[in-house]
Image (tube, rainbow, N blue to C red; front, side):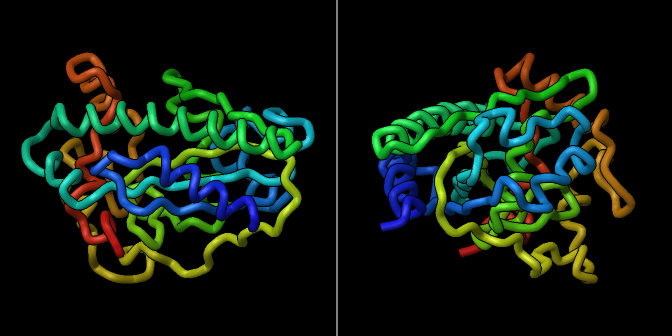
Length: 239
């Protein structure tokens, strides 16, 4: 059995009882791939490289925990994120930490080195030093939508996690099919219409405006979230 199947079983076990999460997705990104090697030009010039996390890096395990439609409904109404949405964000982050530890432990028991990335989010530049979404893109899990969310075969509403490993197994290729209707030439724009700050438009994304809501939510709700553009839109939940 490949470790991808093992990873899937580990994740399933860890999310047992988390009724806001659907069947997880797992992808393997080649640490030496063009997508990963070019991540500094697309995200941040000091974005961590796999070897910064683990010198022996070969494969990055990336996974997606897709939320249920009901989870998104809690954040449908109003012009500010809901408390339940913030709580689900925090609970999912706790699960991701547990999953990462379990994956590293399972690999080390098998004699394979692994490490958990700790890039963090730079609140001054509003950039991540380890972009879970860009890593997931390299692992073939999805393509970026107009709202900067990664759209997977299970939708875009959920959370990503990853672990850098010295595994030597076949990797996944980045997806070539465009999953965002708007980017594919359609007329969706549902995420733009749901953005309450005007941070999203057909022409781009205003980080400052977006983060202003997330920062206020962190102060009032205990999590730097918004998510209005990610819920109750056509690409949020696909089965």
